[in-house]
Amino acid sequence: MDRRINESGRGYVPQEEIKIPPVYHFPPPIIKSINWLFNFFFPWWIAYFAFAYLGWFYLSPSIEKMAVLDISWILLIWLRNVFLLTIFAGGIHWWLYIRKNQLLDYKYYSRWPNEKSNKFLFNNQVKDNIFWSIISGCTIWSLYECLILWMYASERIQTISWNESSLYLILCIFVMPFAGGVHFYFIHRFLHIPKIYKIAHAVHHRNVNTGPWTGISMHPLEHIPYFSFLLLWLLIPVNPYIITLTGLFWGIGPAQSHAGFDKLVLFKNKTLELSDYFHHLHHKHFELNYGNIYAPLDNFFKSFHNGKIPPK
Image (tube, rainbow, N blue to C red):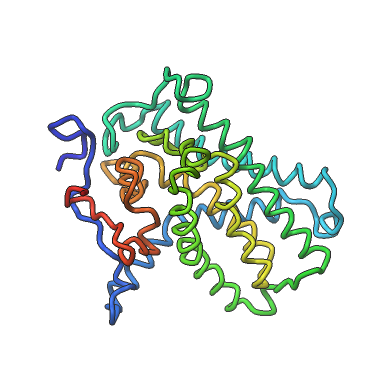
């Protein structure tokens, strides 16, 4: 398959079928599992770690200030999250959709987002996505994060320092996306109940031809359960850096998975894995691939699609 749109003009389709990660095989093949885990965490997690480091150590109020609930520092957290989302989602959007650096190469759909459609706010898909992402998404994400940070800062729940238990905290980071994937699957299935879908989830699913800003473009009634995964850290003590990292992973990470391009062309035809074809198929067909491939509950609940067999 050429990297450009296929002969039918429908867009790029990866040659390889989607497979269940080797870590879920029994017994798991050691070398393949290590290789898959390495590719899962790198290189994109370097960006998430860096954004969380910048966000927590340089763009957050002091622990002492957060010990008292106050709108000033809550607003600062919201502005920080808006800034980081804009840098990440906006940067990918600028590179692929404004600068159009690689044209339609590796794009799942051989057309650009809708600039004139009355199904979107402002009759524009990108403006619609930015509105829901910032006004609703960043607000609800920030409120969850502020609640947990306030409880840590006011010593209502325990804080773990890196000097105290670094291996434990590394394990929490390692487990977080997989536990979040389980949470996402069940939340997502709930959102596909017809009445719930019509009220809330339909806002996200208006985006079939997705882009970076589609990631957390959701109705507030979807953002509330989606970001509720952060509440895990009320039950499991961690370091505040991990709280910020968790919010960012679920807040800016979807900009990558919804970017609409399978690969990012760098230089001299070097490419970097970008979007999630597994989730793209969900936006295309709706009633399959509800979760994430790294927490493959779809395979268990018979809603898995490998990208090759025509969906029923």
